[in-house]
Image (cartoon, rainbow, N blue to C red):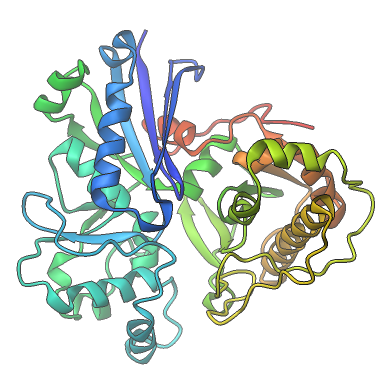
Length: 420
């Protein structure tokens, strides 16, 4: 029996998922970051090695492929030996705000694509004398295993303004200072070669195991869902709220935080809100969430009108870096407070899908859910009422599972993918 391994580096921790040739899960492991808000490359490296060290011997010895996803827009500079030379700029880091304004003045009119990653590139390369590579989180981790630095995939590179239609860096990007640090870009799932021999020997991994180009965490979760046709939305209820759906046409609306990934012969349209299950974890432990949810009637509206952000700033369905959290008034009853939070998040989801349809995405028939929040039945019913359509749970919703599928290339995985 041969196996494939997906590694997911998300907003709160890292996960491993190994699958067999039939797609059945044979091993899973999760490692939480000590301080998710202040992740460092050393945290990622430590988690990577721990996940490889946790593989059962029989799985490790028969691994055929490994693919890694990372948070979209998280970037760093490193030297020739992959040692980090800069602060890590996370997907929600606001330090490159001035560079984002600069890009608006130099990007050609009507330039498609998204530029937050490129703004971070400009911020980081202000002091880049010894840098050899500008890499996204997934690129750096993949290079640690492949020994081939300077390679990215076109899912991660999208927000650094890679042209996913022409499959090249635009001329105006290549004209920027330090553009030579930008990675070569390949298709997600591309074979990058065999795993480094020292890594294979250290963890008992087959020396023939292939390392594959990765993707973003949101796209990996979409791949895991098995959706292959328009008309089905996929909501990732993680720390943030990510919405995605397939569309025959590309949609770019940066003023609303909407972008499209190349996805086989279709486009994967979506956006990511800064709101999400992170606000729930801020106030409640998991056990308390389950306990309080039992006291909520999902058929009734909460009188509370919340916009449940954990901090200033929103990306989608409105793109407003100054949007403030709205979490008042707070009732003394914790179940009523939770009801207001769940309803606020559900309204953001509904507004997000409405925004996508308004911009030209196909109307939806149903929504599938991935991520930790998918297990809350009360929340599912509140969302179903807010969306006005069936909401199910993806049979496979973990990004790590999607990365395991990615080892075979962009997967075509039709079939029964949801349960209600």
